[in-house]
Image (cartoon, rainbow, N blue to C red):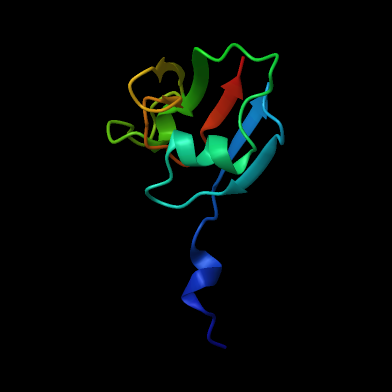
Length: 102
């Protein structure tokens, strides 16, 4: 019996939640950015703090993580960039990132 290679590839997601119009999870793909995910979710609600968004990132997906290391989660603050037409600093997302509108 032969299986397709795709059966052996992990599927990862990113999540956006908090003060966004449509909290959701989507399949991760390389090159996905914070601003694209915010747009996909319908943007921040009127009640949100429009100056800051938090990204929670697992160390498992960093280049420095090695087998046997303890997993850590880092908090990344994305700051509103007034010079970019209402967008945040455009951070490239990683697999399993959780984005929270405050």
